[in-house]
Image 1: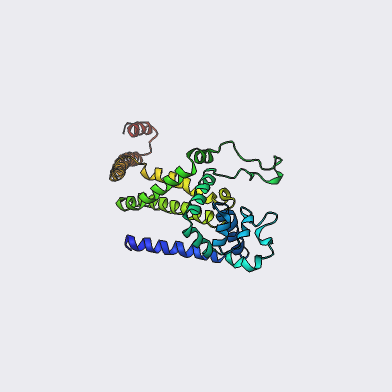
Image 2 (image 1 turned 45 degrees about the vertical axis):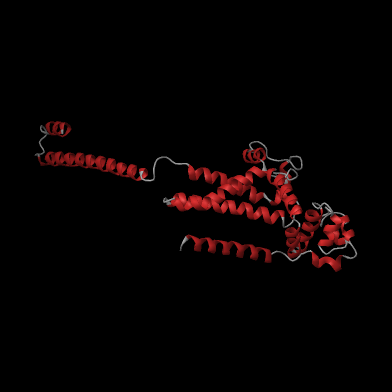
Length: 292
């Protein structure tokens, strides 16, 4: 299959998997997640929450629930009028708002970059409850990766991942070594995973972004490592084969020498056995074998 055909097939599979995953969500989360996106994401990042509520098809005074998630006291769904407007909590309505309000869309993404750069949430512990450690204690003995992400920053990290992902397509087509091409394909997949989870987490729920971006953060780090591994190597593609041939010649030479030695030993042993078993002659025969 040609390269464009493989790309189309991969896109169809990815989109199909995404649609299947959304369809497989429990029914309650199909309403909870859009609600949190509307009030924590859209209204909280709008310059005019009352106008934003109206644009979402809600009463203007629903702006008082700005920044309030499903799980807090006095959440949006506690409003007596909720049943009349609950159907507005749908991803189609949210997508339309994001398209028509690019400023809100950009502010949500910029806020999420900070969450991405945090690498891991500071309110979740690393140990089980029976570990005899304070609640929320985290493993910090050698957090190299999280330190790298925090020092790099979410914006620069995503920029690097994007550039590597874009470069992977032409780069992979120029590679003749199938192992290098496999690494390049994995770089592209990891970069795609990073962006896929970033977009779905940031514009799908808008709360606890750092926790929800864990796979994007790890895939971004994997993209950098795989890209480095792909560019690493010594010499031209033909050199390993020449080294392999030289190794085979060396092995053949050593095998031939060993075979010749075995033949000489077998010949000497036959001459020893051909001697009459005289007690006086065995020393001479042994010396003859040793000399050969």
